[in-house]
Image (cartoon, rainbow, N blue to C red):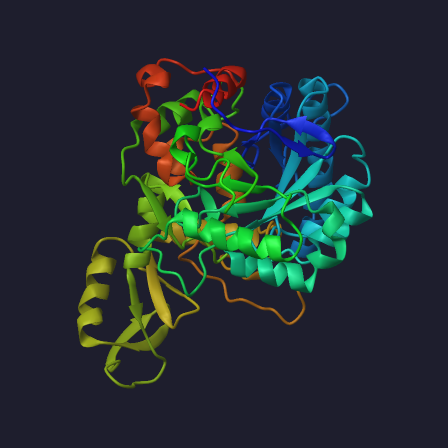
Length: 463
């Protein structure tokens, strides 16, 4: 039985209103995107540092020769462009002329504009839409229009889209393909929670969708679909928004479910780990060096970040308020509270004897080996973000963030987990609904790993 989900027109082609959500690094690939498109849907490959291959199909190894971060970022950009073109070509072949292909990027990734320009200038006919979030991508519309490619901004509120529209998108509205509403409490990866929103008090999507559509209608975007993303597991749970005149045409983005397919590049251990998750095992936290909230599984890696951050005390270089207890650390005398002096003694006794300053006038305690790794990771920064709160890197003049040892090198861990790294040793981005893998009978308790074609067929039934 087919679920009553109207198709949409995108880029002049009628397609299923089903999209594969973009997952970087190297988790949404040309293969997964092409297979989604071959089903008459929309596939998305990640343009965030994707793998590049040579003319013989061999993986091009990433080796950075630059002595400075600026030099290494230029190498990263070159590799990212080659990688995105590799994935776009694979997706084009795998799609067999069906569906549509999107490329997903993070606006706050390093040199995003340079990468978009470099890819789109060479990918004519291969990419039908650019999906972009993680920041306020004002230039996205202008770049898309320049290369006659549709753009799909990711927003978490009507307010965010209003700002983008009035400042930029209104000038290039003919290339606006869709607006992605991503639930900031439930989506996997980086989320768009604002300072005014409480991470512990999620709001219903319905009212936020109505607010977004109301504004879109006011500015003549009645026919532009809203892509609903974050917490989408099955269509039958969204009957209230389908064919709803208050919300208008909709498309559904599936980011989490495609992780467990035969074409998904994550390891078998990674897939089985997802089956083990139960409700509450995914955490919305702020350890990412982007500064954004993000959702990730509470494996050993995330627990290590939580524990490191807990080994943190306020300090001052001069005695003030209750910071009057002297402690000698790293050859310096600092002042902490009397209670924290006792805590510090306990940290040191447990082997966490290296104090590392944070940007918030605190010190965090790490083992000597941990501190050595953190400092090396900071030195090895390749500029994968426009501004990195872990390494203290910024590609902008006049922006000089202080390195923060409470965070981590996101490039290092995402590259490792996407190339066979251990599940417990790396960041595992996941949506809040990832715990449903273990309870959904479609997967037979982890025994059934469907193909993408089988998954899309299942989605189309509403289940």
